[in-house]
Image 1: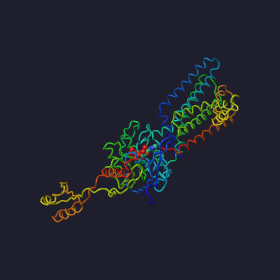
Image 2: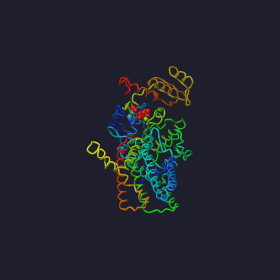
Image 3: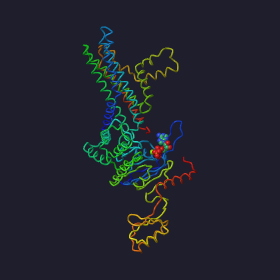
Image 4: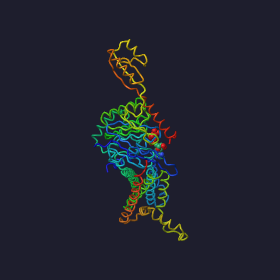
Length: 254
Length: 316
Ligand SMILES: Nc1ncnc2c1ncn2[C@@H]1O[C@H](COP(=O)(O)OP(=O)(O)OP(=O)(O)O)[C@@H](O)[C@H]1O
Ligand SMILES: [Mg+2]
């Protein structure tokens, strides 16, 4: 437990010293503040648009951070051979994987907290109101990022960063549109493609379940029970993928 | 408590990659290293030294056989508690300083902050880290990295050190620093297993050596009694001889003045004994009578040649 914490803190420290992430955070900031410009064009709807854009910014920039840092997370350590001295310590390999993951999860948490604070302040400055559904939406965005991070770490243990990033990106896109695979157009019914596409529906996590942007923008309340089960769903996927990453890493040849 | 510090039992590694010929890097290595020894591991490039060391550190899994540290399989974390490792090219987090790096590894080993302080003092003294302690490793030269790597291997004061070419890429002063560190650790009773191409260092430091040829153990033995090592000459050193006797003895030997007196080199032990008897007879003092063996380098090359002719000149 102690060792996981040591690895996690060090991962966080690495990320904090990495300037590239500040560029991403800077972009997010510009988007959040710039949202007013778009809101201003659509007369009378500005707060709604600002909320919508801010939540989208958190989701997208968070996902980019998760993908770029996550797919490099283990790969870089293998490639740069920093692992040799670490895994020769009296520690289990899974402790290392979990530590790295938690470090990145902590980074994303800081990221989200920062963006939330900026957004809330901005909306209050614009004299808009913030309702609980906004924070529920933020929570589920974080759960989604945890899931994407776990998938990135899994691919980081098994593939190169570029391939990993492409796969996670596809999963991200498909994950937001899984109904497409369920509600197949009639031409496909009965063809060999049908079972394949149906399988995709079941193996790709349904990320749109974690998407409350529209509710938050329109101040439509969401049942807390729904939020709870959606979070459990996302966390379940994350844990499953992290477990796979640990297994893949256990037998890795260095 | 009587298990050897390191034991390889039929240790075998075959690297298999999709679409490539399997590489037999290590073939059935059997080796046992007693506690407190300094053990040199020799072999040409590609002989399988690093492969063996990675197996011993649990970084790769053996295809067959097992690697034991103090009697425990090296794949088990607990077995590595008393082991420190310096990789061939040590890499650490570039964004950390040596001080932070040592702290990081100390925490991984669960060392208390108080002990960490003591340890840091000791490492600084041994490896002269003080002046580089707070610079980012990113800016470091090879020699500085090697020192940091050595410091990490020593974190937690392990009983066994496994060092992969600890002297490579260092300047003479740096090499001496590492050599002295090894001698110091030896005097503390640590077991040290290291691979090296610098045979003069090996000759100076090691109690025993093993030579690996194409993944197979070619030979293993005590440094001062290597199987088949040639005795080239015998050296007799004496003092207190009058010039006339010296002149008499010098005839038919190779003679030179040394600090303590005169040195005579002859080709056989009989001749050496004859000279020794004469020294005593003439009231001189016998300082030393010892064999002059071929250098480790000469021995090493001969072993390689023998192995090559035996396998019909093929290197594989
Ligand atoms: N990951 C790997 N995949 C395939 N072959 C490998 C791998 N690592 C090492 N080898 C091969 O195993 C053999 C032994 O390599 P090893 O690194 O153990 O040699 P070495 O004795 O340490 O050499 P050097 O003195 O150059 O460091 C070589 O033929 C090498 O090509
Ligand atoms: Mg090597």
